[in-house]
Amino acid sequence: MIFGSGPLEAETRALARDLGLSELEIVTGTTAPEDLYGRLDLLLLMSRVEGVPNTLIEAQACGLPVAACDVGGVGEAMLRRGPAAGLLMAPDIAPGDAADSLAEWLDGALAADPAPRVRFAHKGFGRAALAGAALALYRGKEPGR
Image (cartoon, rainbow, N blue to C red; front, side, top):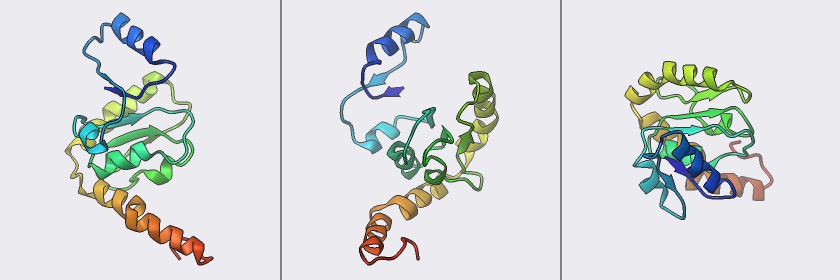
């Protein structure tokens, strides 16, 4: 599945067709995160530029294993320890190396208990955490201190 729309949507659809990936589903428009993520086995985010990607946080909040390139705030938005940890790859990783890394990581990631991912996302990025961080800033303190 590919989510989103934009200037490359037609090109992406044509490429999928040319590669014989007619079963590839491209989802556009607005859909509730839990509906989208409930249809996936994992989330792969191969962006070259990111801030702190909500997509990564939402996927983990739904228990999904996540793999992404280490750009922007990706590393801080990903569970990085334990059997349920995500896969963080170099931003300039070659496609073949990315495929090898994913293949090595995937079975363990899919078999791991998703609860640590859910806890990580909610504890660090849930409403209570974000409200607490905002309140700390208003009070002139560093969040988390």
